[in-house]
Length: 95
Image 1 (tube, rainbow, N blue to C red):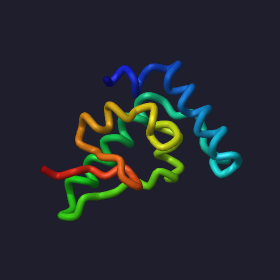
Image 2 (tube, rainbow, N blue to C red):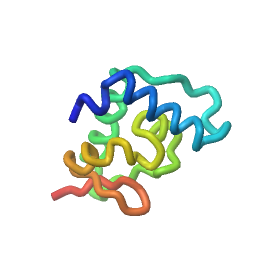
Image 3 (cartoon, rainbow, N blue to C red):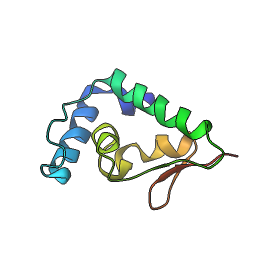
Image 4 (cartoon, rainbow, N blue to C red):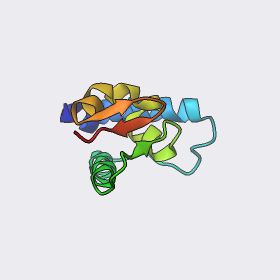
């Protein structure tokens, strides 16, 4: 599953899809490295664990789109595996 996040070709395809969907909203964003993707995933997890409420990631969040593709769809299996659930946004469920 980590391969889906770190593979250069998959990451490039996700980023290009985000740029296409974002149509100018993502101006200034660059292609992220695999380390940046993993670092941001770590931040999303830390944020979800440090609050009593479950934290949400908006699907239109620019950084999220560039790292995980439009709506996080390309990384859906991984995000669900680590405990996020897609509602109106990706939400980490705290069991």
